[in-house]
Length: 349
Figure 1 (cartoon, one colour):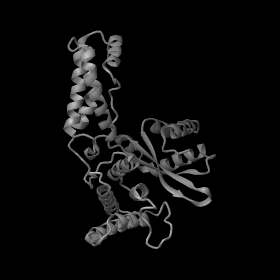
Figure 2 (tube, one colour):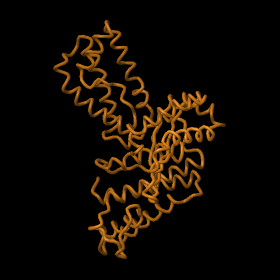
Figure 3 (tube, one colour):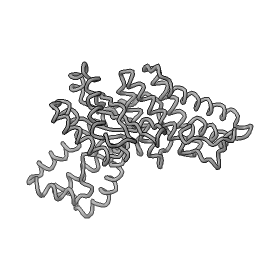
Figure 4 (spheres, helix red, strand yellow):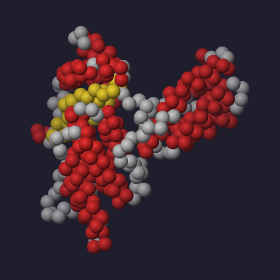
C-alpha cells in the first residue's frame, strides 16, 4: 500500500481520529486534527515476505507541546496503538513509532530552494502587486496574465521545496478575478485581502535563521526521494530533544544512505570485489563497489580512500545506538557529506 503516500495514509489517520474520539480521547483527537502529521518508512524487514515499518511524526504548536510535555510518551503510545488497530489487516506494514515534536514554523532551510532567497521575495512581491493592480483598475488581465502565471509556477515550486504552503491558490489572474468579483466590492477590501494573504509568507522570509548543519550543495533534480529524506532529516534534527528522537534521525540517515546507494549503484557497472552479488539493502558494499569503479586508477587513490572512509563513518554512525545529540549531529554531518561527495561524482553540480 505505502503509507508514505498521502492518499493511503489520510484515511487511516482520519479513522484513527474518529476512533480516539469514540473512545473518549477527545483531546488527543483534537490534537491530531490541529497538527501537521507526516509518515515515513524507517525500516524494512525482509523476513516472511517483507514488512515495512513506519514512523509517524506529529508537529504540534509550542503551547500544546508544553501542556502535554509530562504525558508525551503516553499520548504517543496511545496514537501508535490506535493506528495499528485501524490497520490490523495489513500484515506487511506496521506503524513502529510515533514522535511528537513542537512545530518549527519559522525555520526555513534556504539551501533547498531552486532559486535564490531574493528571487523568491521578488517573485512574491510581483504576484502580490500584480493581483492588487488588476483588481483596482490598473493592469489589464490579458496583458498581465502570461508573466503572472510564469512567476506563480516558479514561486510555488520554491515554496514547496522549503516545505512552506503557498497561501495563494489563484494560479491565473482570471481565477483571482472570480474571487474578487464575488466577494469584494471595494478596492480597499481587495488590497486588504492580498495583504493578509501574503503576510505569513513575508513574515517567514524575513527570518534570517537557517539550519546550522552541513548544507547539500549539489543539484537534487530527479533525486526526489533523496531530497525528501534530506528535508526530513534536517527538520527532525532541529526538533530532536530526546533519545528516541536522536535515534529516529539516525534511522532516517541510514535509510537515506541506502536510497543513495540504490540510486547510483549498477551491478553491471560496479562489480563487487569478492564476486558475491550485493544485497539491495547493503548500502556499504554497494557504495564501496561504486566508488572503486568510478574512482579507479592510481591518480584517484586519495579520493578513493576519502570516499570509502566517509562511507564507512556514515554507515557506522547510523547504526550507533548510544544516541546523544552529539551522536546525532555527527551522523547527519557524515551522511550529508557522503551525499555531496557522490552527487559530485554523478556530475550533479
